[in-house]
Image: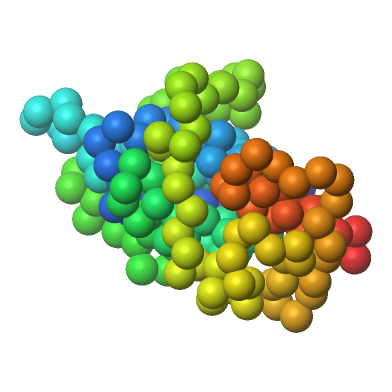
Length: 181
């Protein structure tokens, strides 16, 4: 199926509890771990121009929506545990998002943009949320096996320098294996 076979809402996630320092570029990099990203939007208050504490990410496929919800929900970003939900479940309706339409991505970031790179120290922005790992059956992010949904895959190569990178690496391996089947 092609992207045209799905609605934007089926391919989008609502991202809540965002800290004010979270940018669209950071969200792009983070959610790229779950699959190809088409658009990212963090609405701004119409009156003040201040960034809202929620945003939306649109993927190329609805498969990435489920994966992002499981992988990223609960992750701490600048010290705040973010909430990730499929946009069509429990997120504000287009007319209820404080006059900001979640489907109107007025961002400069689109699938035609090069992937922006995070500038700065990643550990300052993202820290693992240990509650997530226990939900997925892991003892810690530093374990040698990544377990999710009854599947287990050994860690390949040398250990990565920090636990977030290791988690992302292991999640990518798991994602690639699921795509093959």
